[in-house]
Image 1 (cartoon, helix red, strand yellow):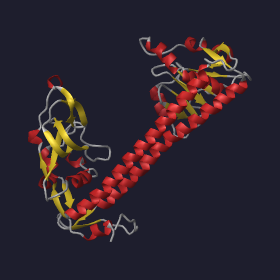
Image 2 (cartoon, rainbow, N blue to C red):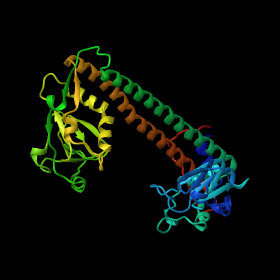
Image 3 (cartoon, rainbow, N blue to C red):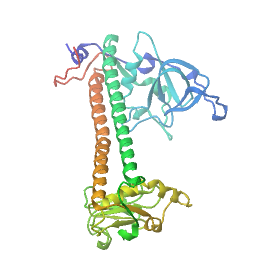
Image 4 (cartoon, one colour):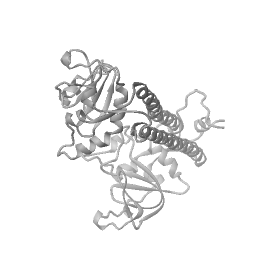
Length: 398
């Protein structure tokens, strides 16, 4: 018999949270920042660790649940923290301890993590008071079943955590390799091959953008539209032909210079435009590989950011890029450098895309099984009940 079948056939009693955990709120003590003595003990508030202090008021295993401010997530479940060891908690987080022989605290944590509390969160800012907290009804199967549920969900949690760590480490390693080879290839310190230093305006053509506001971009944006308009940071809008003047639409391969705030460069191969405080560069010079120029500019982002940071509002002028000197080797060497750096770019981007997708997939698996294990159907007024169970034959162990 697998665990789902065991749960289906076991008795389940619905109880209020106040019956199955010990609410330790009366022992909380807030301390102002000026009164805190620095140390290594976590000082918790509603949304997690706020500081580290020298002393503690709790030592053990607890569930922390946001009381006011940060109390509810987008899926309407409560803000929770599973903590072990010495901690200090202020009066913005409820603290729940285990009542031996009644319910495993980790089981309660998993149940609460998928409980909709939107109906009992009140006011502005949002508040989940102790009375409403204690009234939350949760299903209590036998301790043996609770233990099995906790074991399975702990394994999934550990797996997702381990996977995230491994993939993040892999991405970090690849980025370090990329930076090393990029710096080597673009430093030209060893003068292995001959280069000619040219100002950017000597080898590229400058392009203008379009006059558009952030609110207009937001209004015009349509997913899948053929023209991308770039603004600062990662902001953009995809628009249709006719939404902006034809003269402002670029169809050539080009580099967009994002000249304000965080200085950056965008490489474009599809129809595009950009806010008119930016500019672009394209090339009709057969001895220039534009992608090579792009890599060199990205390699020197820090140089341009330092210029920008000296301004009252961080920005660079077109003169800062126009007069910037680029080492130009032969077209063959440019192409080889581009090939190496593009390959590294592709690996890093694949990991950047694959990492969140893989983690999201594992998280969805975890949430699916958590729901399977913790979704109970009450009979009558929350008396004995059974688990919602589908016949998908998914095996969670025997």
